[in-house]
Length: 273
Image (cartoon, rainbow, N blue to C red; front, top):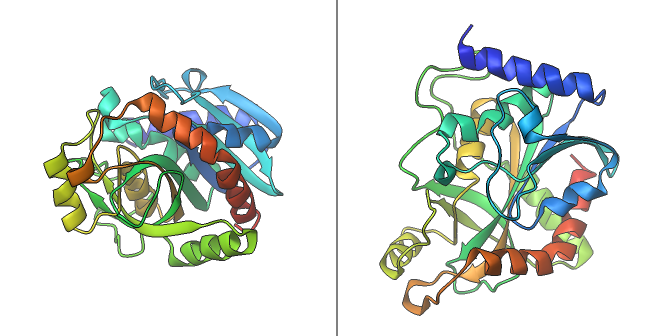
């Protein structure tokens, strides 16, 4: 048994002792989107720093809490905030909660984020269903000893974003009259925003949106056999030729304005998983 495997078991055991519910879906709620967890019924809330081996989230807009309960009748474990590579954490630390939630029993992981839109057909405030990603972080959470209990040494990534969940999200958005986009998410390390030349390059490579999260967690989720749905909130346009100065406060402000549509869509999706 590796030290990391023991840490995952200790964290999962601590959470299971605090909350009797066995979650079926895990939610990772990004910048400005954490209030989704406030909709959870009969919640058990655990600050990250109380969970063994969990680090603390240091980013504004990330509450740093794990909330367990039911959402639209589905038992869930929701992370209000996440850990980022740019905070100085290793990729293994960033993805630690994914393995803990898998250990708790989740079958589906829904990851959300705030992102920059590189596709000219997008607009700030759009919701984008992620169909694929490009890992530009320069790292991978699976480097090092393999956690054999969770998955193979060389996991397949051809269905990293479960097509059936992509179709479900599209269907629920249509039913609710919510405009959604679909596209490829480029994950970068951050924390600096990209230069115009870098954004132009990534758009030409096939990227539709760009952000500093999600990719590590989805790689880990694929490794341990979870179904995955990714939803991005486009908070700004990141088009190289038309780039304007940007702050994190602007990102959170647009995410907050998009929240009602995001929450309405998420509720409809969670009810079906």
